[in-house]
Image: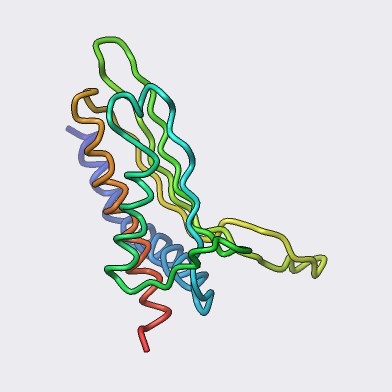
Length: 163
C-alpha cells in the first residue's frame, strides 16, 4: 500500500512537468510543419505475405491521399524534392495466423544544421504505433493508417491555415 501511495505521489508531483514537456514537444513537432508547402507521399511496399492476406500498398496509398485531400492538405503528386510524408507498415505473420505490425509515419524535409550551415534531409514530424491482429482482419490496418494521417493533417493545418 505504501508503494502505491508513493507512486501516486510521484505521479502527482511529476505530472505537471511531464505534461509541460510533452506539450512542448508536441508544439515543436507541429511548428516544424510551418510553411512547408505541398507534401509528397511515399508509401513503402508491403511484404508479399501481407499482400496475400489483403493489405496492399495501393490501399494504403489511396487511404493516405484520400485523407489528405479530405482535410485540404496540399499534395505534391509528383513527389519531387522533400517534404515527403513517408508511410511504412511492417507486418510479420506469426504462429496461429496472427500478425504483429507497426505503422510509422514521418515527415522528412530539408533542414539546416546550425553548427555547419549545411542542409540535409531530416524527419521533423513522426507518428508510430504497434499492435497485433488476426490475418483475417489485416486489411483493417488501413483504417489505422488513415487515423494517423488525420493526426498529421490536424498538425499541418494548425500551422498552415487554409486560404
